[in-house]
Length: 321
Image (cartoon, rainbow, N blue to C red; front, side, top):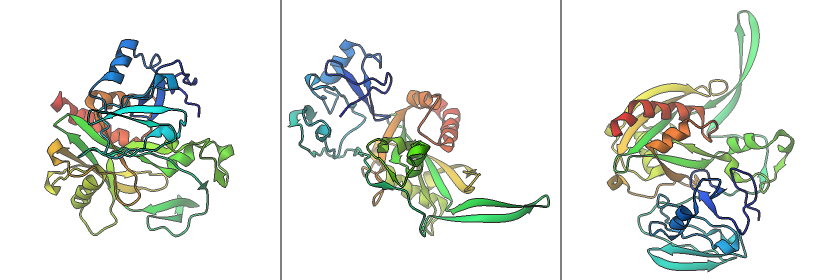
């Protein structure tokens, strides 16, 4: 399997050091990331790291920062059958040979979600409990018109800020619509090649959110989503209502209501990750990282996310600097 650097787009060779980015799930040469040899070696040897990385002689070196604290993680040796992986778990040196898969658990940690897809097919929509495609017929200024729309549930979005460590709590998840939009038109056939177009193309960074499909108030729905997706237990009364706006006005137009809530490490009750088959990954961004992400030319998030993030940076960030 060829691993390419996300910056220079060239293959990572056996003789080259490379890092795995926890934010975008991509590899980058250490030189492209402007990480010198001294810093690179420190990362691999640091006691703060849960994973010491892959043997450099086997091709690719990797580090994962302590911000990713693993509850359960299938190691990637199955992708590189010739590798032997060394890592640390609870300060114990461990290793696994290529071709094996090892699961290990550390108490009170957050899980890392592996996004993989296969058997991708495009079919006509059947009856859905979430959306209903419709056509709206109307006259506008005496002219008969037709507009295709989608009826959907209203939703809530929650800005979660951890005051213990001054980080935004966000989620990453696979969005099929984003994935489909990332595939070139010529390859949007009945079957999509998931090896050529991996799941990462559809993985987005978002705030915790959920639809209003139950007989619950906005606040109760938001409270439930925070616990299910991120593992933090908050009181409905602690949720600050920020704004209600319309989303996807060209085709949906549903209401989204934004809340803000502050949490602490002690309020973390579960690993989060969603319910059923949601496969949600909980991530964190520092204030500086959030501002840098907001100012990127291209991001893997929606316009609504950027709007809400900008609100946070304007109204809340100054309070914690």
